[in-house]
Image 1 (cartoon, rainbow, N blue to C red):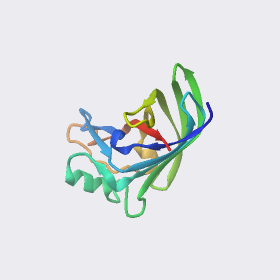
Image 2: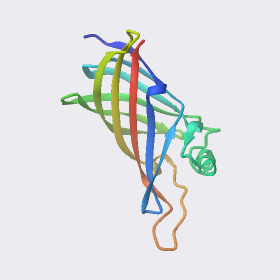
Image 3: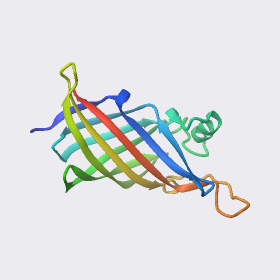
Length: 176
């Protein structure tokens, strides 16, 4: 199969994250607005062109005060950096529909190489005859690598917000 353009179906996709809070629990959140450009043969992602863009103001942790703090200059600084972007630079097959996706992640104007594990979840036609594909991706980044260093010390030792961020994407896309 040759490469095909795919349009992300945001109603059936998600961009989620989790971070340690008070060093004892994981707090989860999502970004509600995102887009991607995917030009790929879903049966062989090694030749794919993939870029992703997330509207940082669309962060949602189900807590308005926390979301507003995350939008502030202490974290994402959405007024100056409205987008978080990722551009794939290398995709290596691990076999069985799994891949190691490497690329340039840009947050707050800082770009670093990051790696995500991607799994091709399948392909099929919806009831209206549209060709659809599904992918999942998982990875971890350190927020301090991107200047997201705000924190508060705890009386018991440790910090309020962990440095490691777990990222999870579930993507459904339609043939464009």
